[in-house]
Amino acid sequence: YNYNQIEPWLAYRFSERFSSRLAYRHTAVNYDKVNPEDATENRGLFDFRYHLSPRDSIAVDYSIWNRDHDEGIADYTSNVIGLVYRRNAKFLYGELGVGYHHRDFEESGRDSESTPAFRLAVTAQSSGLDESGRPKTYATLALNKDFNSSGTSSNFLETREVSLRAGHTFMDRILLDMEGYYRMNEYEDAAGLTPDGSVEDRDDDRMGVVGSLGYRLGRWFVLSVRGGYESRDSNLAAYDYDNTYVMARLDSSYDFNLK
Image (cartoon, rainbow, N blue to C red; front, side):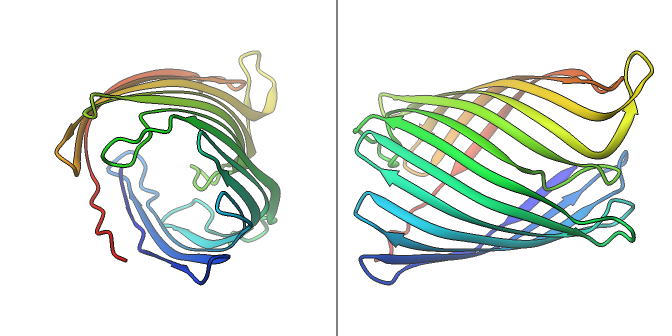
């Protein structure tokens, strides 16, 4: 499938204490041959932030989106509201967010679903930055819990994830990044047969590792090669897999530095 996304946004600082960000995100997922259930998503995102100090802030985040599928997958509208605290110290960056996610399905007879959502992330980093503003050395530990955004055959899930990511910049040109994660997925309305023949709701455990080595081409381009391994262990028959992949990427970022 092809995954296409565009997100224009506007951020504004009202004063020393208050700032806000407004964004619109359009996502289109187009499958080729095997799965015809294409999807279109339109999402609005808004946050209003109070800066307690130059290093500490607290914000109310709100997002609403509609996901429309071409075929049998249930269309839905999601609303997420949360309270997020961030601290940006010299060598340590922290983020703690708690919220509530409510999802209404347009499928006749299907009840709406709700779940608490949270995010906890801590980043340790060096004081030195490379020419793009990236810390020369960093490590991030994150914990997340929420609904997923998409599913197949109207199956949606609640996911919990712990991840660790670290990286280092060598000689201002060579970028090394490593990431590992463990994810627990609990599906809604996705009962099936286990290997011993009993019927249970589907639960998957997924784990993976990813490594990336990049080279900065001038100020605005990074060419990289990344490889990864992912394993899925499901309580249902025929859903386990091991996946190994390698991909090349070219990333570009330009700072207009408008003031």
